[in-house]
Length: 456
Ligand code: GBH
Image 1 (cartoon, rainbow, N blue to C red):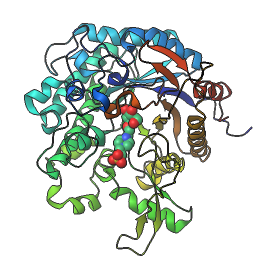
Image 2: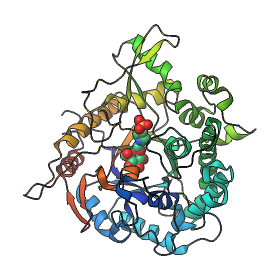
Image 3: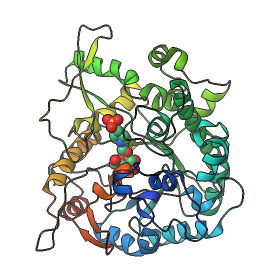
Image 4: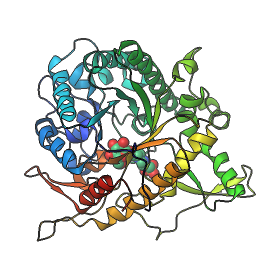
């Protein structure tokens, strides 16, 4: 039967703490940089914040029942640092850990395997006040101490850890000038060199976290880094254009300075040459620390770029999108399902890590959902998008790449960062006024795919 997955394939959904939890001042939690940033006028759509979000902090039981109805066997969520160590470093807030223990126990009671991301952008505001968060190397050490506390408490229940989510987003978009719209803390650092220094510190945090997890966990565990590297897709799959896409990989976005040092132990030469004076300061031992053994890579993929061989100095060119190119409800959400397949293949061939297990740790889209008078959300556009990306997932699995699972972003509509609640990525519609959950058509479609273990 068409598009059938192997029986071991892992089906999941993904969320992140600040985007769904709400309850930002409850049980000892202190502000994160996103609480502060979203409260500043003009930062987020209509001044919205994550103060209430989906109220998942109180409704996690209902939300887990929803996941059980959907049939997922795996759930990726994130743990909020300012719930666990409210001032960033120092005293531990047991009530914060209790929440995640309840959450995980409820997941396990429903037979759902937890995958915990230790950092999804909500760093403690106190550390921004103290030393400018990721501008300081100290951030990496404080992160590792927080990770130790979490793993100590939850390692008997959680065996799949993801260190940090999408380094380029919380560093380059948080500290770089020209990035629109910016992310928290929204601080413009004076030089490009200092922007790269923030992502270098985040890589150190990842490396130190890997070591902390291995040193602390009393159970066998698996550690992944989650990244959203930019995928060059050969516009035609012939050897010359495939070679062009491979040559383009290290020079696109922050690929050469994030996923490459993490997986190969070196910043890409092409990037360093391009940066010159703007390259980060790398202390002796840093690259070894960053290049930790990993059990998996989490690949967040939404879109990509087409590349072809060309007679340019680099030997390739990135093709612009024509105005009518199919796109979902974000400016950057061009429908490029091959980017999922080619991302997995680049990990294997371009970065030469053919044995490293891969998870699609996020894939999904925003759509302009409305509730019909009959009380349905018929998001056929989301199904159109997801079906193609799942077909690309199937292709990667069938060709033998070590792609082990797929986490759909997202279970619920949620706080979409600077777009607030204006953009809906969920397969469940959330009426924020009542906090009612309404499974969309895509929820029922995805549930059927999971039950039949194939793309429908
Ligand atoms: C993920 O990142 C996040 O992990 C998740 O929290 C979020 O809700 C989800 O995606 C949906 O947005 O404007 O051309 O410079 C998204 C990755 C990072 C992709 C920023 C687009 C901006 C491209 N995004 N990037 S551009």
